[in-house]
Image (tube, rainbow, N blue to C red; front, side):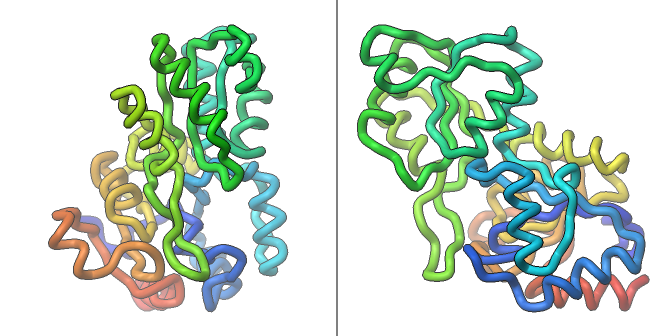
Length: 271
C-alpha cells in the first residue's frame, strides 16, 4: 500500500463526496484550498451522466469553488469518447438520459434517434442508458425493443441509487435493470467500476497508478473500480457506503476517512 504522503493525484467522486444534491459538504472550499496548497493535482470524475462538465463547473462556482471543465470527467463524456473510437461518425444511437449524455454524443457526431422514430421503424446499433429524472414508459419500451433486435446495450454507470438530501434515490442502474428484465441482456458498463473511466482520468492527470488515488463514497463502484485499476483507494463515509458494508461487500479501501475535512486534515498531517 502506498503511504498517503506519496499520493500526488486524486480522482474525486462528486455526489456523496463533495456534495449531496444541491448541498455542499462542510469544508468544501477549504478542501480544495488544501489540495492546491499541497500541490496535489485532481480530476473530478462522476458516474452521473446527466450534466456536462461546464454544468458542473457552474455548480461548483455556486459553492465558491472554481474548477475548469478540463478537470471534470463524466461517465457521459467517457462513454461517448469510448464509442467514438469504435463506431463511425453519424452512427445512430438511442439514448436514455439527460442533457449531459445527449450533448456528449452530439459532440462526437453520433446521430441520436427518438422513441417515436423507433416506433415508426428506425433502428440503431447502440442503446446507451444513463440516468434521467424524466423517464417515460415509451423511452424504456423502445430501448428494450432495439436491444431485442440486437442493438449493443451500453450503460454509462451501474449505480442502483444516488445520494440526495433526503436519502438514496433510484439511479441509472435501476433504469438499466428494466431493460435487462425485459430482454435478458446485461449492459456493458463504461463508468465506474469499469477501468475505462479510471484510465482516462489517470491520463488527464499525467499520473501513474502508484501516485494516484480514487476518492469515493461507494464501495461497489468507486473503491472496487479503483482497486481493479491498480489505484490507491480512499473511502469517505459521507455518502452511500458505511464501515459495516466493507466486510459484507468484501471490498477493502486503502484508507477510510469520515469526509473531505477528515481527508484534508490527514493530507496536511502527513505532508
